[in-house]
Image 1 (cartoon, rainbow, N blue to C red):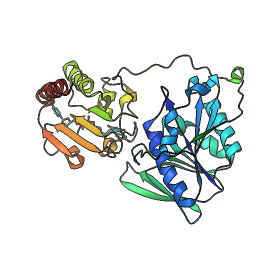
Image 2: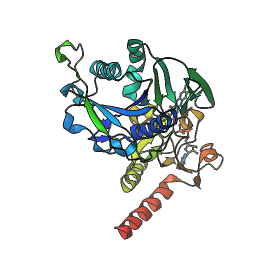
Image 3: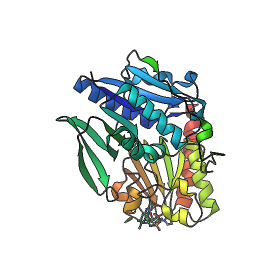
Length: 327
Ligand SMILES: Cc1cc2nc3c(=O)[nH]c(=O)nc-3n(C[C@H](O)[C@H](O)[C@H](O)COP(=O)(O)OP(=O)(O)OC[C@H]3O[C@@H](n4cnc5c(N)ncnc54)[C@H](O)[C@@H]3O)c2cc1C
């Protein structure tokens, strides 16, 4: 029986949302192909294996445990993935399309002799190959790609699929792995977190994105207060990264991050095609803009034509009131 293997990124002891979305899709394909649906995790110690994976359909969880995985470093990450692939011999490995995965996918394809289909919005197994749709040219077009190989690596954009529970009895199998940290030519000294909000942007369920309409510290503080009230991550357009108001890590778009939250609120953002390429997968889009003709309203589910400096204080107050009633 062939195996479809999913890489599960673990963050603070839990599988990332995008990993569970990908695992759910892998399970659907495995079911339709009569294949086994397996997951792999690379964790600092075996006690850190997330318990949830069986709930999302993995029959088997392959675990590589080594202290080197307490931080993301490309060399051991690549070696760990390769060790699992060599042991399991899957026909397809599916990844969430995270920054860490993007860093190593090409090298992994070379090492394992695989075909690679990166950053897709949808994929299926058809006529013995993998067919995928991949957004190109700032997501204006979809490129249809087909790969035929004994092993195909696929990375999937966050938000492309729903994470759907389908409980199974998952067995756990350790994969032998050793790594000489002394062999590393780079050392990761410190991970400096951006100061934009407490929630990680790529996996956030609610994102508040600030644009050039946010002109000063008062506007920035309003954005932070709204994010705090909603438990949201803060993102931005490139314009306010370039003017130094927000860090580069907050940028959403063609040359920034791709986000797919349940709720995206664009505040003072015009909706340039390069920005929309990074947020159009969001389930509900709210735009607040003084210009009724701003292109962001073309993709918005709800639009507020108004000055963010007047709209946000009212919105924040109403959200706080609603939360107080619900508490
Ligand atoms: C190759 C390339 C790659 C790019 N990659 C990216 C990318 O990844 N991400 C990205 O974001 N951009 C990217 N850009 C830049 C992009 O083209 C736009 O310039 C940028 O997104 C504009 O940012 P903005 O919407 O914040 O600013 P603007 O276009 O200046 O829009 C500001 C909006 O705020 C509104 N506004 C003003 N005052 C208020 C107020 N008080 N209340 C409410 N609304 C107000 C205005 O009506 C306006 O619509 C890229 C460009 C190129 C050429």
